[in-house]
Image (cartoon, rainbow, N blue to C red; front, side, top):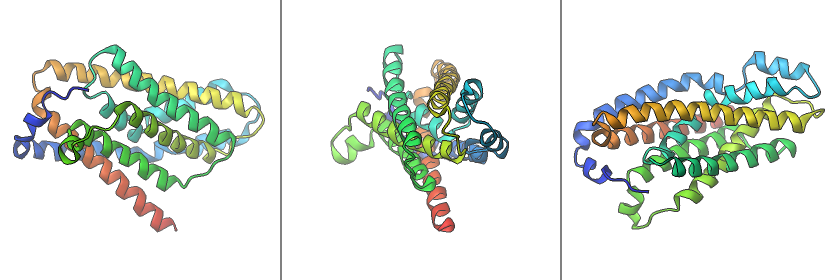
Length: 242
């Protein structure tokens, strides 16, 4: 991927960094939606009371989970930050969807349990990675460029385990499990497309405003900062809960 302005923008870091920190604070305010991103008591109670095939409720829950999934959305925003063609956007989003769909379905079906705090910390690290990649940090620091397609797929696998962990919190009945899981996955993809569409519309206006390249550095510093705070929150939660 081409990052036409990041290196040049780095020299203006002293100007844009305060804005980056402000944007990071705004992004992290979304962390208050963490309870929505998890399992609400109403949703959990409903799912625990039903058995059999219930496609529409699971589609709704999947879409709701993705739309309120601030960590997933931050990563997706980073992935498409410097993507302009519909072909490239479709490819990267498809790789991410393939990754998270695979581990979500397999994780729930086979009951693969991963500590929610640890997997969410890895998801936070995926946000940090993507922001650093957008900043060209790996090329400057190590002289190498990670394979962005492979990284998107791999982090998609981790995001899928995060989804699987949340679904297992629902204590879904085994009766009708596979159709319900597939419906949940359809909902996740619907939610992802809706969120992606909103992100692309906003970025489209931003790119046409003339300030996109000026503030790209600051935006990715903010994204990186948000990712580090997400990691810190999850690691702290892990030790407090232990």
